[in-house]
Image (cartoon, rainbow, N blue to C red):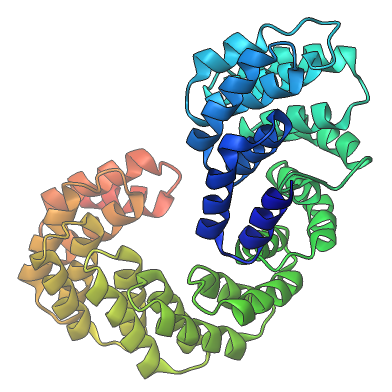
Length: 416
């Protein structure tokens, strides 16, 4: 075994090729026990094709050696030879020691094929034989978790957790945190996230997001700042962290966070607009317009940015800017009826009544079910002296809002 130990030491030092050379040179003269160890090392290092001939040879010599059979089935599965794997696993009898491991392994294989009910039946069969075996509870939890049955997986995970907090590379506390979060039980989820204490950016992101969803912006801020300290290029956290600061009334911090995020994610239109909104809260009007316009540069069809700019220009009574912007947006092919409505309003304020009429008519084609639009359009037509058209439009409005007595009386006066 000295050569094998030498190879393992080389692999641990990162000299994998050298380790493999040692094993391959030693392999022909190795004992059967050593060949099994070498095969296991190949499998662990992701070299299933190298492990296969050794295991097939050993299985031929020792067909009743259950450990060899189980590992060979694993290697067949790794090589996507599912039929051969199942053929071996189905050979185990209930009285054999390898029967329960074979059921668990078969369940894992069926799960990978999407045969979830068959997989669950295998695991439940194993659980009847070994009700207190934690690996079975873990496997049942994993199956339910990966099929989106989060409430179902929780009791299995909690039972497995009584024995150990991890199975393989899976941290059960993290699974429980995610399962509770997906089930809407935020406090339980946060308790498990707190226990995990992971530095993984993805785990920290989900931890913060769960806290944010549960109204615990304070926790989200703390966790997401740790994330950004570890990985400032984690783009998706910046807008959420900015919103969390904003919810806590920390607008300056929110604005700074959003601005910092733009350095790492310079084509994020939502983040540009968010930065603009935060700038406006701080009365930084020029910056607000600059960031919103940048969002539109990235996506001329970004309606939320268009409406933000419209509202800002209205407050400043800059109707000319609204007109110019909307005309440019419409020329780019963004044919939204709300844009024609707002363009009509802008032209009305600029006393360009004929243009306003054309805009209202264009919007009317799509907004016949919008009561507010019909009322406004109807009164505009009255101002323009188009009484018959106004009466028709206001009647359409009244059919939608029959309780509006003022409009009803107005129409009655028009008829007298």
